[in-house]
Every structure is written in structure tokens, then in C-alpha cells.
Image (cartoon, rainbow, N blue to C red; front, side, top):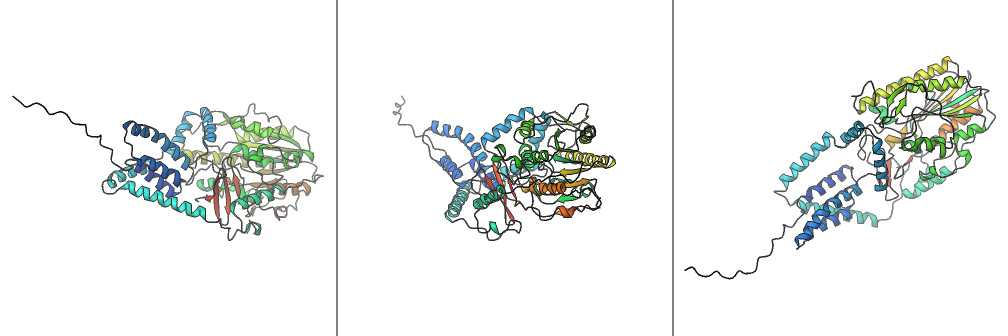
Amino acid sequence: MSPPHAPAGPKPPLSQPPAGLGGWSLYFILKLLLEWKGSLSLHPLPNLAFALLLLLPLSKRWLRLARSALAWPAALALLYYDSWLPPPAALWQQLSELKGFSFSYLAELAGRVLTPQLLTGLTIALAGYLLMSRILRLGTLVMAALLFLCGRQLWQESRPALPIAAVTASAGAAYAAQTPDQQLDNFYRTEQQRQVSFQGPLADPGFDVLLLHVCSLSWDDLKAIGFDKHPLLDRFDIVFDHFNSAASYSGPAALRVLRASCGQPRHAALYESAPEQCFLFQDLARLGFKTELALNHDGSFDSFLQQVRHNGRMELPLTSQSGVPVGLRGFDSSPIYNDYAMLSRWLQLRMEDGSPHVATYYNSISLHDGNRIPEAPTLDTDASYKYRADHLFRDIGQFIDLLEREHRKTILLLVPEHGAALRGDKLQFSGLREIPSPGITTVPAAIKVIGGKSHPRPIRIEQQVSYTAVSTILSRMLAQSPFGADYRPESYAQDLPITPFVSESANFTVMQRGNNYLLQPGGSAWSDYPM
């Protein structure tokens, strides 16, 4: 007979999971690598706190399950916080606009984020992690790196802000020995005092002013496609090599150029009231110009037309687009009219108008990201941009020919809104323009006089300038006619107002400081912009 079973003793405690970050080490390693590359602005203290919460020993199983469930959204939120993306409220507003994008454009944007290089890098990082985790305590290395970054941050914050030792010649001695915040405040204080005066009477009895405001065209974009020495630029009389549009989106760029008679305001001030004498086309109207408004699109996206009319004080009817051929389709499938046909329509209507002086604002989005070319729908981003830029430049060249044949005295102002970010940079992939970097806001502005003495090559303005330089030249041309055999462009371009580089969007400020550029997200701390 078998002996009776011994009474069962107490159950052994459940084994605890092994200490360490485990697979979360890969998350932190990837973020540390992106921080090292300059593609991420890793905040050490929140990341260290998150890592410590992951390491916190929990005896109850439900607590461990709850932590695991909450860790993923927390990790994504922390990754977003560390990224250069705009604040959630601004991103939500931009995401709401995606419903108007075509599927092909959304797929193209996804392809720019999930590039083959990125996917290859992630694969290599995962393989490296799986191999190295067998021989090294990667969690320990991650914690050491985070502790080092925290210590460095605390040490830097404890030091007093150092003034800049030297500044560029264009910035002037007024910016010496200042913190970045002081430099920015002084910049806006100086700009607030600037105003270009438009005095009558007009020096010539009959001529027009035509402002071509072109979307998505920067010097960096032209270099990317080999158009920085395009023959069209040589047809202008004055070309600006360092003109800062100060904006990376169309609406703010339009408001800035329409306020070209005054110095550069803060981004938020663009949507506030301003003195009448700051608005370029109101200045021209006071001198006797009939003012007009023309677009090669419907102006509905991002309420562009509404901003121009209300905030830019251009409460004018649109030049008729009826019967004008459609050259492109926008990223939202809206029609984009052929530039030459649209400008020819303007000239036709102008010649039927008996007004001695007409000033027109013309906006073109032919180069906007995501536009579709009906006759070449399979072109990739770079090829499509080059194709459209070639057509736009030919259209402008043909229009200049037409003005010359018709002997129309015209001051033609080419002022791009901003660049297309065709090449992107360390902080923003191709096409992303949330941060107004120098590559996006340094644009090829130019001026040409039709009806004056022709010049074989333009004069180049190499100083750092902005809208007041264009309005200054224009005011001089209105007071002293350029329509004659003695026309010399350089006589109108002397002693132009210098504007140090400051660009601003709703969420970011970029400012030149010495030979470098600084970035300030949403009014927080300044950091070097990785060029």
C-alpha cells in the first residue's frame, strides 16, 4: 500500500521578469542615433524618466500588463515630442487638410518618409541589436548615455548665456554682445521703424507694375535641378542672391510681400492691423495706379484668396480665368491654369483698359509640391519639378517677349514666396516646410524694366535683403523714370536697406547668428540649425 501524499506546501512566488530595458533598448538606441545625426532633438530628462519607469520593478502581473499597454502610446508621444514636427494642434490642423489630397499625392508623401535608406537603416539597426544584445548589456549603455545627456543639459543650463563674439558685416555692430533673444527683439524693433516712402507725382505718364509671386522657388531648388544659371535670370536687370522671403508657406508669404512698404513684422503680426502706408498696393493706389488681382488657381486651399483679400487688403475681383487652358492639376485635383495663357489674358484686358497706370499682383502655384502633369503623370518628384520649372521659365520668357513686342512699359517684379524644399535637410524630408530654413526662404527675386535701355547681364545684389529692398527700388523707379536710353539699373540699387536673416513660421524661428543659423521651436530654447 502506497504511503499517503504529503500535504502540499505554499506555492513558490511567481518569477519576476528579468531586469533591464529588454527590447526597449532598441527604441532608445535609434533615438540616440537620430540625435547624433541631428535629425531629432532628444530631450534627455523625459527620456530618462521614461526609461526609469520601464525599469521599475512591479510585483503584480496586472501592473506589468498595464505598463506595457501604456508604454507604447507614451513612447510614440515622446518620439513626437523629440521630433521637429509642429505642435499637435498645428499638426491636427494640417492633417485635416489631407482629406483634400489625392491618393497618389498621399502615397508620394508616404514614400518620402519611408525611404529605402530609412528601411535599410532600420533593418541594419535591428540586426545589430539582436547580435550585440547577446554579448553586451545594451540597457546599461543606454542608461549611461541618457545620464550623460542629462548631465550635459543641466551643466549647460547652469552656465550664463554667452554673447556672440562676432557678427557678420550685414548684421552690424548693433547685434554684438547679445543673447539670441535680445538679438531677435532688437531685429524686430529695428524693422518696426522702417518704412519706404512712395512720393508722387509719377515720373512717367503711362506704365504698369506687375508683381509675379511664384510659389515653391528657391535658390536651393534651382541648384538641385541645375537651373541656378538659367538664361531667364540673365534677362532681368537686377537679381538678388540673398533675398529672404522670411516665410515657408504661401499665405504668410503673400501677406509679407503685400506689406513690402514696411519692415519685417513678426509672423503673428501678419494677421493683425497695420498702418495703411505699409501695404504696397495701397501705396500704389494712392499714387494713381489701378490695382488688380490675378491667380492661376482658385485660391481656395488654406483660404489663400481670403487671406490676400482680408489681411493683405486686396479686396479686388479676380482677373477672369474663363477659357484659359488648364496646364496642371493640383495635389487636390483643382485646376492650375497655364501661366503664359493667364498672363496673356491679363495683358489683353490691360490693353482694353484706358487706365494710364495699372499695378497687378499675380500669384502662380505651378511649382507647388504634388501638382500633376497630365501629359507626364509618371515623373518622380525631382523630374516633375524640373519639367514644371522649365515650362514656367519658358512662359515667363515668352511673356516678356510679348510685352516687348507690344511696347508695354512695365516694371516686372519676380518675388518667389518660398522654396519647394526639393532636397530637404537633416530636420525635414523633401517637401516639408514647417521650419523656414535658409534653403527654403532664400529665393531668386529679380526686377526687369520693359521699355528701358536693355542690358546684356543683370547686376547682382549680394547683400542680405528682403522686401524693403524691392519696394525701395520700385519707389525710386516711380519717382525717376527708368523708361529711357539713360536707364542704369545700378543707379536704383544703391544703398539698399539691409535685412539680417530672420525667418518665421507659426511654430519655428530661424535666425542667422554670425556664420551660423539658430533654430527656436515655439519660443523655447535656441539650438544650432544643422546645415
